[in-house]
Length: 321
Image (tube, rainbow, N blue to C red):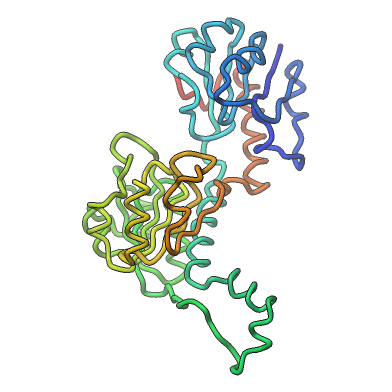
C-alpha cells in the first residue's frame, strides 16, 4: 500500500508524528506541493493507493492519470480541493475530518474580538517602548476600550463553532442573535433566532461561522453593511469569500464599521493588492484559528481512523457516498 501526503507541513511542522500512518503502508511525505503545478502533483501520487491532502487540489485531470488511487483523505473539514464527483465516478472514496477545531476556532474568534476591544498587544508594545515610563499619569490608553457586557453579538451560521462562540459570548455577558438555516435546541439555549436584516440592524458584533456556498458567498457586501449599526465590529474566521473585500475596506475607512477581525481572506496567502491590508482598524491573521496543537492532533487521529476504516471495508466520514 503506497500512501502519499502531499502537503504535510501545516498539519505537522514537527510537533506531531506521522507514525500512526506508517502501519498501513509505505509512507511518503512532502511538506509542500505547489497547488498550481498539476504535473508535480501527478508525479508525486501517480503510484499512490492512498492520497492525503490538505490544500493541494486533486482534480479530475489528476485522477485520470493516477489509476491506482483508491482513497483520498482530506486533512480538514472542507473538501472542495478534491473533485469529489470525479472521484465517485471512479469508485474513489473521499473522507474528511469533521469537528476537529470547534473549541480552537471559537476561542480564536473571541480572541480577535478582545484584541479589538482592548488592543492588548499595542499597549504592551508602547510600554516596552518607554511610553508608560515617560507618562505624567498613572495610566493611559491609546485606543477606545470597549466593554462587551450587555452588547449584542449576531452569529451567522450556528453549527458547532457558532454555538461555541455564542456560549463564550454569553459568558462575557453578551446577548446573542442567530441566523441559521437550521434551528435547534442547543441554539435556542444561547441565542434568539432572527432574520438576517434583524441581526444586521441590532448587532454590535457580527461573527461569521457559516460555510461557503452560493447563498453565502459575498453575504457581507455594500448592501448588507449599510444595514448594520454604525460602529459595528465584524469577525470572520470561516471563509474569506463570505466578504466582498473592497466593500468592507470602504466601510472601515469611512468609519461605518469600527473594526474587523479576519483570519481568512478571499485568496490565501493574502495578495499584496488586497484592499484590507490598508484598511483602518483591520486585524488580519494568517488563517491560524484551526492550528492549535490539540486540534492538529485530532486531525491526525481522525485521519488514521479514516484510513483504517476504509481498509477494513467500513469507510467513515465519507463526503462522496
